[in-house]
Length: 50
Image (tube, rainbow, N blue to C red; front, side, top):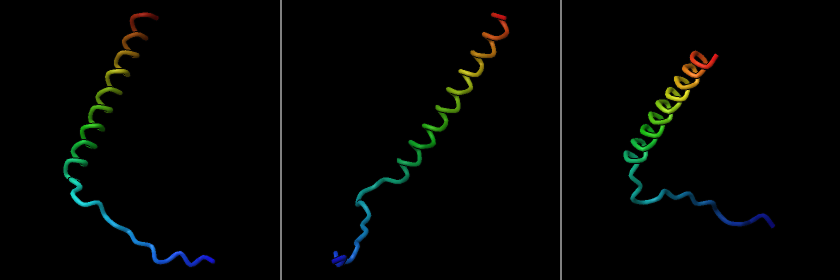
């Protein structure tokens, strides 16, 4: 009943892991910079509007 054969795991051919890691690092860097910009704007709004 549960005899479905052997599981096979395969890896995708032609994956460019170096490019994936560079894209991830860029995404994290842009996210960090964006969060810093938003925090700066909120702080400046609090200073000048209160």
